[in-house]
Amino acid sequence: MGRIVVAALYRFVRLDGHEALRGPLLEQMRAHGVRGTILLAGEGINGTMAGPRKGVDAVLNWLRQDPRLSALTHKESTCDTMPFRRTKVRLKNEIVTMGIDGLDPEHAAGTYVKPEDWNDLVDDPDVTVIDTRNGYEVELGTFEGAVDPQTSSFREFPAYAQTHLDPARHKKVAMFCTGGIRCEKSTAFLKQLGFEQVYHLEGGILKYLEQVPPEQSRWHGECFVFDERVSVGHGLEPGPYQLCYACRMPVSEAGTQSEHYIKGVSCPRCFDKVDRDRRARFEQRQMQVELAAQRGEAHIGDDARR
Image 1 (spheres, rainbow, N blue to C red):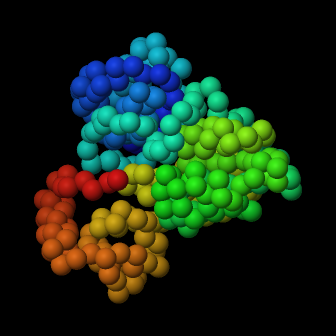
Image 2 (cartoon, rainbow, N blue to C red):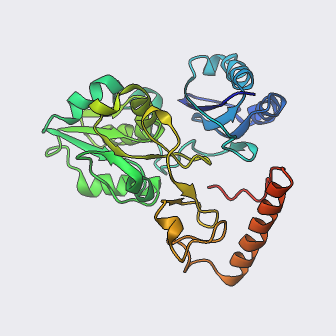
């Protein structure tokens, strides 16, 4: 089959009747051997899918036949093994949950900055650079000099912005996130608060790591991704992290050497938070995974991905 193509996509667009898209889209993905999770909401589409080249292209072409999604863009990378266990299309109130009503990311987001121009922007001492991702993502890597809001979910970002950012003091604000979608909302929110010069990295960290050579990069570390690759580095090559099945958080190579790391059961981050019943369930599942591997079979299991 060759290398697996991974396509991350999103588009903010008024998608009336999005519920009717769920069934046909799920059919298309299954028919073409494509796995992953796609979210549909009245404000647009968001998700990541993976499969053979022809399958991914077929699903993307099908989506773009809808006039509202004709301008849908996506970012690609490749890997050797399927990074998703299942095929899902979910209906949501928001394609990325921020919890703020009245935002219009389609028309009111900040100014896009292309990856090749990002270094010049963040090198400007008058620019406040903000990482809009969650704390566990920032732990793996970020841009030098970027502010970490120390949030555990994107819902916390509005409160952070209202408390720590001031239009009179922070004249220029540049934001970035994994693929760009969170910045569409965060920059629209800042403009709603009265900030005028608001910028965001077009295509997100993934596009930057794909296009900017390591020797010119301002990025340090790995970029967390929401699939079984766990993280990617420059050139979008999979990184050294593993995913803890219990808490769905990244585990470093050093973390796997901890006494609290039990594959499929717990890691140093969650070992004291997993109760006896859940631990027993995880242990049973891991045993089934290993037995399936011995038989040369894939174990779908209970996908607990957030």
